[in-house]
Structures are given as structure tokens and as C-alpha cells.
View (cartoon, helix red, strand yellow):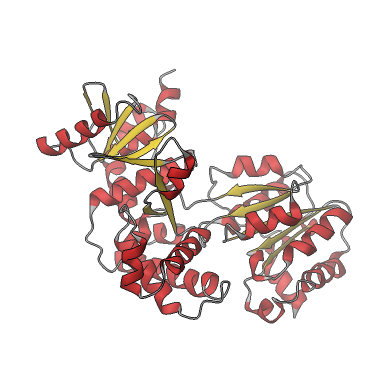
Length: 425
């Protein structure tokens, strides 16, 4: 049975290769392949980790690696469920592979969703030190691939973190050119429609593939349920799973808002300590992320009130109180981009509020500044924090103007600034 599963999962052994959409992290990934270190790929479920690994398999084969020297194992397969508490079974899998081919030379082993096996890192470390195997492992839990890896595999691993499709990758999927001014002008209408779609539905590949919005929502809801009941509840031995689910959907309804742990404790009738733990779990599996209020003293940042964001805009569509707030959706989109650029991301609040502060720049997000009061509110917010920074950027959905020294950019030009600068060289 085991050998049959390995043959089914490794269709490249029969020279049957699928093609995959190139991801922006692919070049970084393949640059790690010649190195000894284990490559770890982390990211939320269904973001494309397996496809990225399989695309690397195609790359290896295209560059002369024998197909039989590459083993891919999806450990989520139901067959492996009864063995998940026995890390030694990973050796059984490897031995079954060796009996099939007895490969010579360097071997590449991909263990997909490895967190399903307890104490997997002990096995990986032993093989890493005693054999010429290049390990590639994927996982959907940040703690598993940070704390636990660092304990036993310190200095032996390199991480590729993969998010859902970025807007540029979304446009590549759609076949919409955007990298030159000519392309952006020629494709203006298609770009606008793509912005509207991505704003609401985000970058999960299977969601991008379908047009029907009710099906998109069903897919996203199934992702959330699977993550909660497969990755969070069993891993952390949570007895009251209903509270976890209700809390998550409540937080989705309040994305971009400020957290109050005492209020949440009262609503869900659990301690604020438990609330914080549950939110930690949501962060561990890449569903949500909190950001701190900026303060010059690190201790004060840690103690500050947090704001909460979703790590893909599509998740907001399954919130029970989804009012299709375009302003919140745009702010979440900007958060997603900025948090990929730097871990040092904060908000500012005094009498006024600045949505984001990162790398010395203040960012405000407003869907539309056509209303004079809205425009004044956003501009005044920058003035209130001039002592923090005079580098200001106001991001809108579709407006591009200059207000005093403030750059007002539509979201697409903000995201494409790198390509635009290269185009203007």
C-alpha cells in the first residue's frame, strides 16, 4: 500500500510533469537548492506551498536531476493518519522509496505538511547529519517551523515564507500586463476590474480560478473550518472548539479595528489570557496578525493596544457581519503588502490616527478622497505626526494627486512603484 501511494504522488517518476504558475519566491527558492541546508516553506494552507515545491522538482529535472532521485510525500494523505504519532515511520517511507529504485547520488526529499508527524524534527536532523539528502519540508504553522526547528535544527535550515498570490501574481494569472506604462494604459479597464476583484477576494489560487462569488465564499469558508479544526484545535488540545470558531469570525468582522481583550473576554466568557492564546494560534497558522501602536520604547510597544488584520483579503468575505466596507478592505490590502516588506510595522494614535508607520514613512489609507471632509481628515492626520516623520503617502483606490507634500497614489501604482521606477530609467 505504501509503495502504491508513493507512486501515485510522484508522477514525475513516469516523466509526467505538470506546469505551475511561477511565484515571486521561486528564484529565491531555487538559489537555496545547491546548499546543504534544509529548505522550509511556510505559509497558510492552500497558498501554494506544494505547488512551489513541485515547480522546484520540475526545475531540478530540467537541469539534469534523475526523476528517480526525487521523492515527494504529501503527509496529509489519510493513509498516514494512523502513523502520525510515530516519527520513525518517516524512515519507513524513505526505506520504501529506496527499495523501489535504489537511487545513486544526491537525493531530494520533499515532505509536504510535515507538522502532521510528531517529533519529525528529530528524524530530519539525524538524516541531515548522516546522509546526502536535500530535504525540502513544508508546513502551515509558524511556531512549528520556528521555535521547534531552531531547537534541533539551528543553522541547518533556510526558510521561504509563501503568502497567497500577490496582486502582481494575480495579474500574471489573469494575463494582464502591467510592467510598463504602455501596458498599464492599454490594460486600464482590465486593471481596474482586477483591482476590484482582488480587493474583495484576495489571492487564494482556487478562489481566483472561479467566477461565481458564492463558490468563492464556500471555498474560503472551507479553508477557515479546515484550519481551525485540523491545525488549531487538535494541535493545542482545545476542548471548547466552538469558542475558537466564534472568536475567529468575530475578529474577521472587526478587521482593521483595535483589540480590547477585556471586552472579548466578556463576550466569549473566557479569560483574557485564553483570548490572547487563541489569537496567538490564529497568528501561528497565518490567518490573522496584530500590529502594535508605535512608541520609541519597545516595552511600551509590547504593552500597547493592538490592531488586527487578515492575511488575505478574501477571508473578510466570510465574516458574519460583512458589510463590504471598501475602506477596511483597502486598508487590509495595504497592510498585507507592508507586512511583507518589513516586520517593523506599526500604527500611530493620539488625537488623530495614522494607519501605518514603516521604514520612516507614514501611510494613510482612504478608499475615496473626493469628499472635502475626508481629504481634510487624512491630511490633518499627517500634520499631527510631523514630529515622527515628514515622509507621507496617502493610498486610495483610484485617485492620484499631490496635496502639499503628500503623495496620493492609487493602490496599483503604490504596489507597482518598483516596476514604474525601472520603466522610467
